[in-house]
Length: 141
Ligand SMILES: [Cu+2]
Image (cartoon, rainbow, N blue to C red):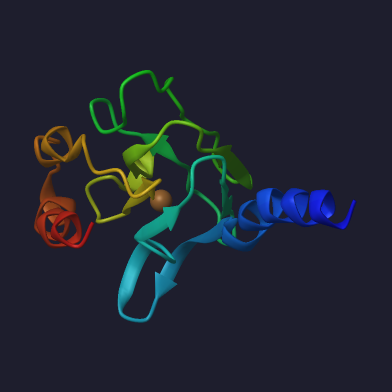
């Protein structure tokens, strides 16, 4: 009986220990930056959830076309609301805030340490300030 319990524990434990839901704030200002996600890169495991908190108003989350793993549906949220997304497909997810996508309000989620779609991520056409920021962030993925 003890043995069985131990085995069950071994099976369940890692899921809890490594579960790493993340919270990202949508901000008008952070340090010297304006219009910014509090974390530009987060890493989660498959099955984890990311929460975007609408700390400041006027922001949202939109997955960039071509910037998510194959099989992922379109995701574009409303403004001024807290949102969450459960990541079930591994890979790199690139997103931006729709009204500030040229002002550097971009972010990335790496799911399951899988970077197999990195070439598509590099092909995303960012513009203006985001174009300046993106290469450095992508190199850190
Ligand atoms: Cu924004």
